[in-house]
Length: 279
Ligand code: GLN
Image (cartoon, rainbow, N blue to C red; front, side):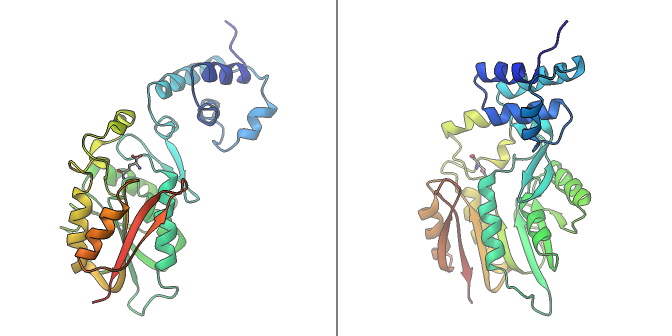
């Protein structure tokens, strides 16, 4: 049987409604090539796939069309310049979360105090935020927490592969975390339990996505617990839903945080809100 060319594969995906960039990444994955090598596809558009590559491509196409994130199919995701291994045990890291990392890096003191710089990522999932921060600030002691042993296994493997000395703790938010920090950052679950948007996210762990009837249950807990774990003047930065900035600002002010403000994601939506504790 003849196998299709690269162009024919991409056309097949297009006909079935797949985004071009997704199809390109899945095709590169099927060919065993680096996922960023899209230019290579263009210069090989008439190459035919081997039967094995074709079988891999068909399987990948099928999984993507049934709604699985590209990252779970390829097993990889680039985040803040790092290539992470990801699978269905963890949330697929979103480019929007780079806003949280950028903000965290901007508020961290340029030079650490003599006792060092302690940074905490709550709900680390694949380890994306903690690893990005540790990579950018080798002088910091970065800790990462998750309540899922499965997620921590993924995050630990990423830390090991990237050779980044993040310390991982199994904890329900701050319950089992010792000490105080110079920064706490979190991308917690924040989707309301009944949100219709969840229908498109069925392949991702639900406990990484939903948080009570209004999506704010975990953010409330984090804000309540963070006060006793922040050094004076230190920031708590939270990612949240597209319509939650005002609510999160209110929760932070109520808890005594000052300098409360928000930052926008790539789509220009207020996506992160933070404040600091000066007492
Ligand atoms: N940003 C994700 C979404 O698309 C949700 C991630 C989260 O809950 N932390 O819905």
